[in-house]
Image (cartoon, rainbow, N blue to C red):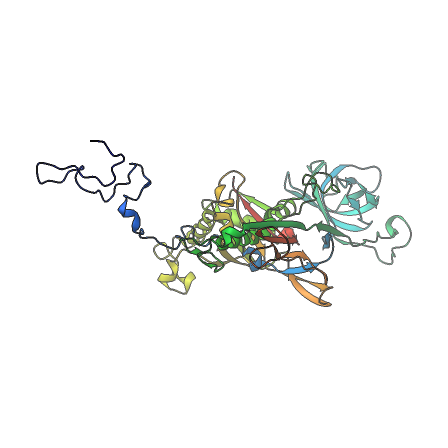
Length: 489
């Protein structure tokens, strides 16, 4: 008898009434024995698995933007560059002044030379304070003669004792000098020479800064066939996109990522040191972000820890006193630095009432034991503390800890008044704000447009939908001397 192969569904008889692999149909048999069924003998394939239709949001809200919306504003601009001016110091002061014995002018005079090519505007009869950081010595003097201009010098005579600064033990370099007034004899005018010489007119000066906007672009493309394909996983994104069309998720995430880039560029941006003018990607001018502005023109605190917290923090306050002394400030911190601040504040109250000073918290034990501080006052300053997600996220700054890592920023809550050309009126703006390119013809704050022949677009023969995103913007960090950047050791 011939043999028929293959024998589909064949059963081999057995002498006993028992179940064997050879005499019953296996419910889970997949024919070929592999992991994937290759014929219709796998009866289990007719049943759908128990499927969770929605993705699990294991990273929570993944977006990072929001920092600049909290501390800044957005205003339009029409140029390739934004320029602003900041005031210089009001009073006359010099660092790095050199000292040497003078000639025959006065009694035991000393010649002070302004260092670094700074412009000497001290006049005859000015009274000055000379400080020596190296020895801690101090002397008050009167100016006997002066040489105005860059790198000029003055001949001074000390009031007491009547001897040269060098003879008093002052070092010959690195002195600090500031003018605190003047002294004239009776009946004298400021005309003539010598003791009656004309005073040097001090012209106000300012320091000018600039920044350039950078063009940010992104794109998502989906072909027409995939747009018509239904998936079994339901779309769920941070901006509310929903449904079973997978391309909706990809488009939504592209938009969310681009919106994060709008802020990240303003935070991380750097000016390009290569020559400008060639707009290839190697020589684009770049833009100055928040971190670069504070590192270049502001204050940097390295290695802030809970162990030396209050000491380090008081040093920051003393430095702020020498700057704008803005009363209200905001702290945006990564997790460890935020905990260091909590430990620092908790440690201030230690040693009272069993280790907790309830009086600091309206005599409430519950409040005192809540060691997650959101605001506090130290000296004459108020601080509001919050976590900055950008510094904690493992896909951004949270992946960097230790050497040279960014651990937080202190942002002043001050504002300045400026005339807005678009609005035609004076407005108040924060020290930290975003400028974006816009005019009556085109607004480049946040552009998006659709091209192709799918998804409702009919602009080309391409069987796809192209979603484009574009913005052109930069960050203006004014008065960076009032900002503090916290960095790791």
